[in-house]
Length: 332
Image 1 (cartoon, rainbow, N blue to C red):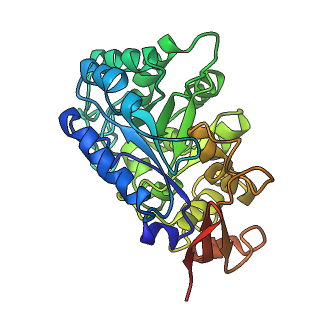
Image 2: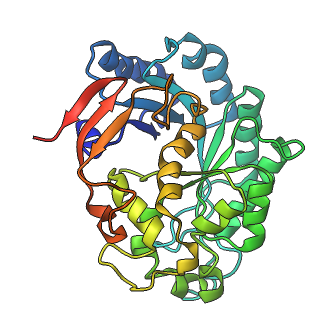
């Protein structure tokens, strides 16, 4: 928490305790809440939670922490969505693709969990009013999970805000469908720093040109939030914002940006990190804006993020971080 607030992070949505098996979950949730009860918590924490079976989810929802836990209104700790994993990563060639990897014929990635398992868990979550967020990187993984979500989404409405995490390899048709169904996409722009150097060789130039499509999905009216994917990446949000705005790696290449038509402006990028992330946890009416009646969660930066040279965005540092009106970090 000390590390996160030093980078200006005031809220996290994470799967740290949620991955513990059901028999141990309640104990660890109590341990975590105790940190906050003792005044040691420094930021708002929204739990993503995994389950081994629909039965385990049902037990949690009907007899476990979801009904027995103590989470008063405006608590800094909240219980969040079911977290699922569909495939692996592009770097390891385990992301699920519709076609063979261009540089590894015969390989289309690995399915982490099959469709029935995903469908059964999603149905159980939906029946208990739980949001679902699913790790999908390859286009085949996204298409598969979207088919499951579409069985839960009625008349194009997605009231539980079921979401796709990463959603990296896409084509235009997929993006249009995601936007039409109001499925939230949780992007991590920092992945471009590495992936721009491999995506064309893995997927081919045509598919690469419509992937990491931050601008296209935004223009289609898609629901978008940005995150850091810590601890796979660092929890510093500013390199993420830099990658979204410039489409360059952290060394400043390529000079013109990687498929620069997918660059977003700085206001769009900051919105995705603030208002978009608040929307992801149904909190857009309480945080994500400096506004009367909203939480006093804010940062003071060492330069103006809206006017600075875009190449400097990655180097921005917070001078002060405030959560709920309490100063939780101040640069010495």
